[in-house]
Length: 337
Ligand code: ZN
Ligand code: ZN
Ligand code: FE
Image (spheres, rainbow, N blue to C red):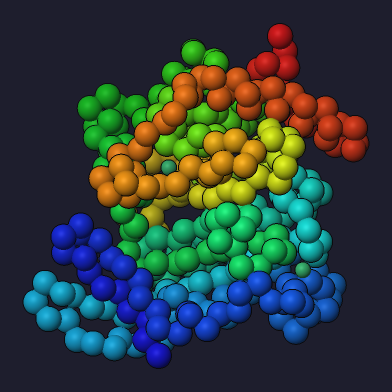
């Protein structure tokens, strides 16, 4: 069994190679996360489990030696699963607000805990939903990969944020919030502490980003009140997605926080990105020739038009949540008109 990092000298990035992962179950018949299962037991609202088929491990072994520019390192790290609710079906929007706030507490706690290992440079927390994304287990859950390196997408964000900070003396992300608020037409939902918008530079058709309004670098820096506000945005945002085409929409939810290598990242601003692959109810956008082969994304509509569709869905979503006795903390801009 091998868990190793192999360096791609051409792109300058690590690949995680795990030889045993192929044997993981593909959509098993009995749910391993439902209450009463061997892994989870009874009497819980939220559960953190070690990933049974981890790509990274603390006792990682390599299968081959480094040779010249072909570098190999043990894939040291942690892979964890967060089972967000005992409910077998549903999305974040179906989870009760206090339970969702607890989910955010757990994400913050694991970020600090796993990040405190001096060998861990980055704690990546994310959520995959839906068969189109390749989710192998249906029961609502998120994942954590605690990595011994800073992943390339984060590196690029850090580089640009740092450059902006040193040139302009302000945070790039705080500036994006200002631009989105000034323009207004791409904002989907906003409460006292968070703002959700479809970015000017969206890559996926219905991609949206959620920024805390306060300049913070990681979830553990959020106050209790802010965590409830984040739970509220997550609830409304996922409800909006499921209302958009009146179908349970698949998505990737990626949480971007500062690295945990102990350096100063006060120029960074944490945020959450949602990438649903759908372009409409049935059709999915693939990362194909131009996207994968060249790394350049195409967007086949105007972001402002799609933001408008999301705003309409958000208004409906808020109404529906209210009819199920949940009162959203914030408003859809559209809602006020
Ligand atoms: Zn289940
Ligand atoms: Zn900021
Ligand atoms: Fe980001």
